[in-house]
Length: 376
Image: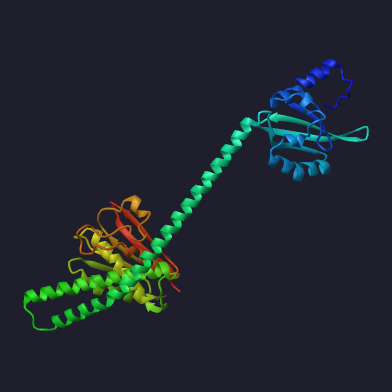
């Protein structure tokens, strides 16, 4: 296209039959020359275009706007454009996607634009497929976000309801426990005493369950369990907790191993709750004829409470989620069956003390839950 008008005939023929469309326009877009390739792609002749049509006249409405707002200003400022994709109108009214390169040159003091173009149907299909895929991905992301938000809202509502119901259950349960205590202090036959004892134990289990549900709600919605830290004797706190637990689990042997000086900073009531939850878990899953061993150890910088029981090991798939809420209840038919909040609360108590909870479980060594937190 940059050759003079007196190009040899063979050179003119070569440019006319080039594998790409070649055009020459004036600064305002009027066609000065077009090769045969461009004409054949558009179903037009050179006579239809040269001196009669402007380049922008062959573009769609969007293309014409782009030509006015981007193409012409950029070509004027930069002197060239490359890889611009436009839709060009065929003689039959259909459109052909084309990729254009353009350059401005000066001939005899007159600015001329020289253009080269390629049909880009395959690229256009690829881009359209990318756009469809992106739109589909955006729709999937939006749907996933909606489902996630719905799930969070349902979970929040359920947790709030759990806290409200648990709180409201405490008043009638307190009345039952008070009534059973009064009955137990009266003159009862042996069979009546057994019934009252069952009522008392069932009330205590229900009270612990309600406590777990309230703690769970506080941990999930209230930013964590409340703790009141102060100087305590860790060994004494664990020992007192075991004294009460021996009454609740009269048929099980609970051993206490102490190590180091017991003084530390912690919340004694929360640690007693922690030990109670671990013992309940050990009673539910441990081997009944083997003692449960509770160890309280105070080291120079940390405190450790561990509970060990023999029995079937925890499956590896369960170990990964053992401290999540509602993932593992007591054995079927067990009196200690729960909604699976005990171990979740154990870890929450450990976290509120600045520590964490861990578990190891093998067929040979049994199962050991270990809580460690800073001593100070």
